[in-house]
Every structure is written in structure tokens, then in C-alpha cells.
Image (cartoon, rainbow, N blue to C red; front, top):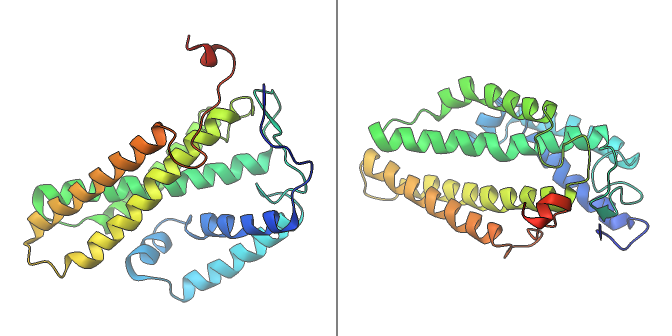
Length: 233
């Protein structure tokens, strides 16, 4: 057992600063067409309406301490202690894993296809692939596989770290992918070589940040194991 936090209460600014994180999580969650249009074309009236709904919901749940990080006091104070995970944590972290994994996977598949035949199929991938992949994450949660969304928080010391490894791997890579997409039009390259260059950039970024996260060189990626896992058995 290892103490995870040394405070008895969460300060007000700490609780407030977590709200924008969960606003973003639920704002980009809906899938096709909202999520695709947001990433491809930027926000429009539909996105602002949805954002207003999300802000109201997160503010309500956060004020009542029912959003991770917005609680009056830390729920997990020690790693390696058996305690039931709370329903709002399960919902929020399942949503976060969908945001992390699904758009990245669709983007990677799109880059692979484009590097083979030069065709960009991201619209169709979002249309037909977003919800099956999102349902796969939900199924993983139902089967008690999703880190930080499991029924018991005993593995939080490692699950939290792997969650941040995923964030550090995906978020910078997606930003770099966006930059490669935006600036690619200024390169004097045919569609096929351009797609292969973008794929190479994506894979290199993924490998770099994943390696740094695995080596625990990035913030919050230090893992703590208990019991058999700690013994390496």
C-alpha cells in the first residue's frame, strides 16, 4: 500500500481546474457527424449548443462533487487498497478512453489507407467506424478491463499511470497530425507521397511519446504495483 495523496480536502481552485478537462471530454464525445465536423471544419452552431449543454452538466455535477477531480476530498488516498469504484468515475473515464483511442485509431487507419492508394476516407471511417469502436471501449468497461473504470480501485497506482501514458502518446501526436494535415497543402507533393509522409510523422510521434511514457519519463507516468504484479510474477 502506498499513500497517493497527502491532503484531506481538495482546494477550490483544484476542483475548478478539473472542470474544463471534463467539458472537453464530453464536448468531443458525440461521434459522427459532430466530432468529425469539429475536427475537420471547426465548430459551428451545433457544437456551441452542445457545448452549452455540456458546460451546464459538468458545472452541475462538479458543484455536487460528482466529477473526477471536483470532489470535496480525494476518493483514492492510497494505492493498493480495495474499494469500489464510483459510478461517475466509471462513466467519465470510459468517455475519456473513447476520446483518446477512437479518433486516434480512425486517423491512423485513414493514414494507412491513404498511404496505400492516396485516398482520404476519414469521413467514411468516422461515419461507420466511430460507434463500433466506442462500443468496444464500453464493452471493455463492462468486462472490467478499462483502466481507471474498473469496479475496484486497487490497481489505481498503475492504471492512472497507463492512462497518462495514453494521453501523452495520443494528444501530442494528434496535434502533430493536425499540423501535418494543415501544412501539407503547402508542400509540392502528390497525394500518395504526402500521405506516406504524414503516416511516417504520425508513427514517429507515437513511438517517441509511447517510449517516453513507458520509461516513466513524462509527468504522472510513474507506475505503482501491488501484490503479485509488484513481485513481477
